[in-house]
Length: 186
Image (cartoon, rainbow, N blue to C red; front, side, top):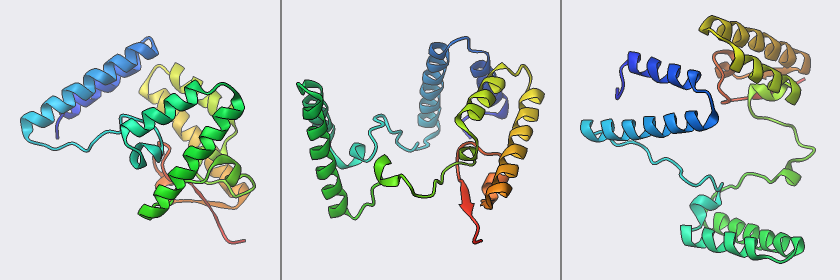
């Protein structure tokens, strides 16, 4: 391991005590630098982090091509021109994905009307998620956070039962946005 349990706990505590988003961002940058340095010292190869959160385009277009698409969109004179450029981009993206045998995620309008899947948190309303997030941020102790986590789990499990959704095994433990609800055959 690159860090001792004590060092990881100290990092988590520093993040929890950060007063602003900028402070958390700076702490994360420092942690990533320290991780890379330790990995190099110990001869550990770390997986590449995605620097560009550009969706499928991040892997199907070169950085130069992405920059050109971005510039074209930024320089478009009208919203209609931007929409046309987005359509051209999507068409080229879909063709490249098809050529490489990659399945692209469906776009929002293509998903409408289909069963929603995703995280267990998708069983909660946006207002509930916002309220939980605010309560979690204002919790002062690990015990308060654990109690809120248990309360949230109970609510998610109740919602799943009401909707006839069976949570994946992973979702029954600590969830951090991974895995999601699956409909049970009715």
